[in-house]
Image (cartoon, rainbow over all chains, first blue to last red; front, side, top):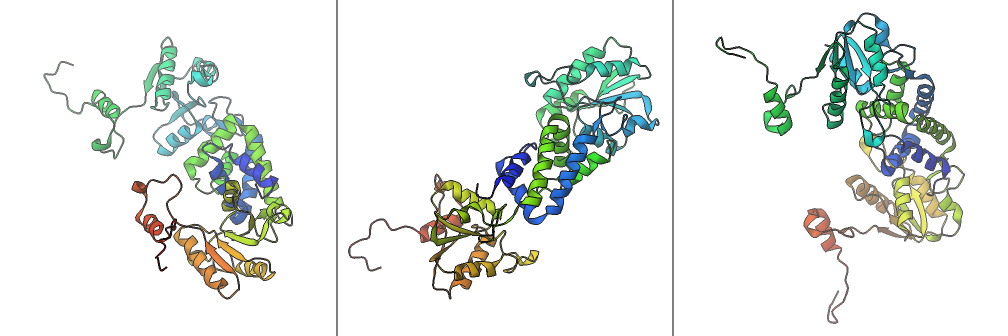
Length: 206
Length: 206
């Protein structure tokens, strides 16, 4: 490269961000240096602060700067419900949706044996401890509806079977606003088999 | 958000990178904090160093940590040729291709009146000064073949007409490995009108 080590080092460091290849890294470095040096400074400071200051909530394993995250610390949630999610982003999305009132447990990933991520890495032990402390009546498996998320939910479901608690899974079906024409076969079949009864015929057996 | 100010600030700062929206920023923050804190530290340091240490080459306007960039400082290039490009990334790409042996001038953008980017912002004055110092016999307009790059090249071509130098433009045509079936009409028409003569008929007039 013709423009010096500092830029090469910056491009290389930017490539450690997920989804950033050499071209994108170059464009980012160019943007920051040519149009937004202030942004570059802010990002450096924010990274430094977050890398040092952010740890995990002792209870739910979500990112937190304090011993307990805001949700666990609030004391105002329904302690009979515990929702298991894959990432802090999933937790944020559920919080923004606003309907769920219980607590969380964040796995920080999903089962992925090929990458060496098993039950130990995802803190299943900690999850069981948390449930053993009592109070939880229903565990809602809120992992993604992907193959890996599904496998993780299945594993957890087996693990929790011996405990005297309800275990549930997020409903699968056509998303709100979804058009049947554009749904994949899996989703559609699932929406049929999990269909919700609206009116029961008086003579119906089931 | 349920996980504290440091993460929110990090996500916000990541959004100053081009092409990064809220979801991508969240994924990047998660990746750095959960899987690559070392990368986060490196990126913070690289940003800090680049924002402070990188300036512009006094001669060609490319990014450089020194008064002159490596190309201008080499003293081994063909000083009769000057290639005008839009960005340092373009310069790098040409250098990697390896066939060009002259010097460069980097505009750091293209003409874009709606964004307030005119001849002054692109350093046309500096470019003319550089040419006035003598030695340059041909200016190769190496801006992109986009509408904006083309407009910039046209403007520069007019500006340089009064100087006693050759002004040329990168060839337009079908890219190496390109299949005619998939070329757009513009490219194909250009390839016809700029076709290269291989054998001249002895009776030909032109």
